[in-house]
Length: 280
Length: 259
Image (cartoon, rainbow over all chains, first blue to last red):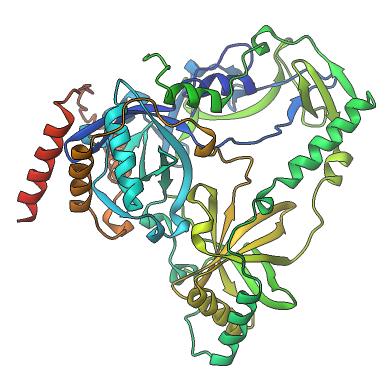
């Protein structure tokens, strides 16, 4: 949905960066009757080395919506959101309607249950966010983080954010609360739905053989080098090589908005946690 | 209805192979909206334009470039990008087995079910062995020209492969400062602990329903029939009493509920 404001001239990576300076969502975390105002920030970056689409002369291009019927380019205000109820028949739903459809209590992250973090099957985890205290909530925030840290628990809640309901697990990491959005139970297929065969009787010797293989290849720790992004590393190496050779390099007039505007997500989070982010 | 396999390959541990088929474990239930031209209520499409001239640039004319400095791009052509693609392979190579808690939740990305492709004994034996040993296999494979790292796990007797994010994609809390503000007092901590204990339970995802999704669909259906359902205005609210008062009130309320 084109709900993020788009500048008329062009949209680019820096628009994404500028969005990062503000919390993705602001709201209240509650447990019992205690409420903790929080700001929510992304806990992950999307791509490390995005490639830009350029024109024949190397000019950066912009993505635009256009009407299939009239062929005309459309601005944000020229577009609406529609649900297809029949072929080519749509029900229009506005941002405001979506917002009003969320019941009052669904706008808070109400930690209704605390569970052992390790007991959540990983197939539920979706996206990661950080929560930072806001509006002077540091004390209650720290209290919750410390309490959960000591018991190795995660708080579970559902809440509505930007026109969508999320199931979320909140747990501390190094004194900071992480929010992991999760898939709902009906969004995970069962082995039966997928059509997997049912387990059959197994020869004990075959299981033993695999257990031996597992033991032989086991390590205490995950090696982080396993999680290195080798494809991006190879891409950056090629870029560096071509830069040194001055090969296929184009210079275009850098639009002013590009300058000094790149906002580091980590820096924003640091400021926010230090209580330096001004309340909007 | 049985799902269709999206890929086939072999799990490879040292020289032992287990043939498998890969299925998506996710069925996305998000209410799907289309973006429409407000005037004609018809679908929109996207294209690339040169923002200076407002002219459309066809896909054959588009080049890809990496921005090394604002306004300076290194162009990478199709052949160069293709050369960066990993070699195609049918092997899901297991690099190591680790305790599941070694993989932090933020690394897990998309889950897939693996099903046996022929040898069902090896398939179920591997699942059983993973379960008994309480281990996850760290796997590497290439699928549709993309390199993947994933965690191979046993879930209720079946094999599951969850793709993992790159270390560079995940922001670590270890690189962040602890939040400012004073440390909680002992009394507050013990009350908070009591409160959390009262709310402790098992993780059962079925206890949490996406009610909002149902509300949106109901609303859409009513509107489709020509009704105009009234919606309440959104109020903002807030502010509470001192922390320890609220804590003790919460504990009391929960104990009453349990009694």
